[in-house]
Amino acid sequence: MTILVTGGLGYIGSHTVVELLQNGFQVIIVDDMSNSEKFILDNIEKVAGKRPVFFPFDLRRKELLAQVFDAYEIDGCINFAAFKAVGESQEKPLDYYENNLFSLINILQEFKNRNISNFIFSSSCTVYGQADQQPIDEDTPLKTPESSYGKTKQMGEEILKDFATAYKKKVSLLRYFNPIGSHPSALLGELPIGIPNNLVPYVTQTASGIREQLSIWGNDYDTPDGTAVRDYIYVVDLAKAHVKALQKLMAETSETVIDIYNLGTGKGSSVLEVVESFERANDVKVPYKICDRRDGDITVAYANADKAERELGWKAETSLDEALRTTWEWQKYLESRK
Ligand code: UD1
Image 1 (spheres, helix red, strand yellow):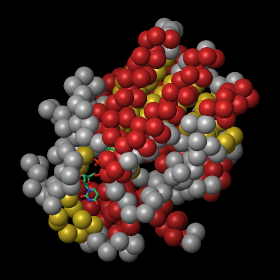
Image 2 (cartoon, helix red, strand yellow; image 1 turned 60 degrees about the vertical axis):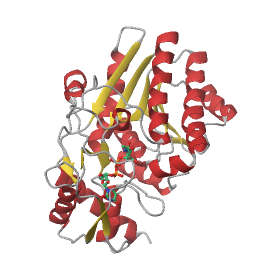
Image 3 (tube, protein in one colour; image 1 turned 120 degrees about the vertical axis):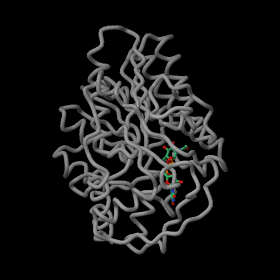
Image 4 (cartoon, protein in one colour; image 1 turned 90 degrees about the vertical axis):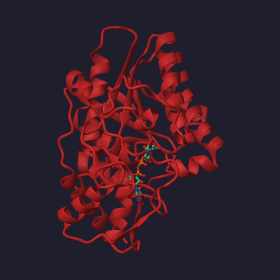
């Protein structure tokens, strides 16, 4: 089976490509390298023992995309390619709508025209906004996300539901909670551009001295220690869920399938707990200061991921400490490359 993985050199994409290769899939990556580097392709090969086919182009280039579909018999797609910076999306909403949605539609057009099914979409827990209940299951009502980034995820889901219904296709919408960590080989991980927005890369860079101190955005939330609570899911566990979701879609006998799964650990951790866990796992200090809340942040979000366990036979297995240990190993690897 041959799977197109868009954004396959990115953070979650690269880990998923490894899992696909290790499970016997052929992989074709399309990635415009806007948030990755070529050495990731070499490292995928080192880890998986196989080199995926790779095309460096922007998925808005329809004619190049068509050539890939002409050249290979593609059985499915996992679509990671997207802009993902929440703050930036508020400044450049049109860039986000254009990049995230046009590229999605271009692939779906090829699927429609060539009679291909099996499409997996990277969605996010951002589609729930600040949910009225915790943990969040898949039936929790959606709220319009504050950011344009979040809106592209919600719109992407709607596009895929219509696509599956109208053209009798199989789709899986995977709602990630907060992905963290790096591959145990320390050869794959997140490559934040510039100053990281997300917590764990910022913690890591602070521990290594690249950043002076971590700003904790608010300690006056209605949570046990006052800092905001999220569900941090180890990226390799997350990558494995993609393979399971794909295998399930492929095994489905019905023509039309719309699967939706929350992918999280089911456990909430506060910002302070993440800092403490990082310090414990790696025996390093992370200097921090408490600051005002960050605009647009929610208080708490953690998953009920029972549906994924029931239907995919998947559950998160890696502890927060272990995930944060791998992050530190990756940071040391990055520094050794300089
Ligand atoms: C956000 C998005 C999510 C997206 C993810 C990846 C929303 C509601 N969530 O998640 O959809 O997939 O980014 O880009 O839009 N924090 C600090 N100091 C820092 C950085 C973060 O205290 O320097 C805190 C934040 O306030 C938050 C927690 O750490 O409470 C996690 O933040 P972050 O890693 O940015 O992820 P989310 O905002 O949860």
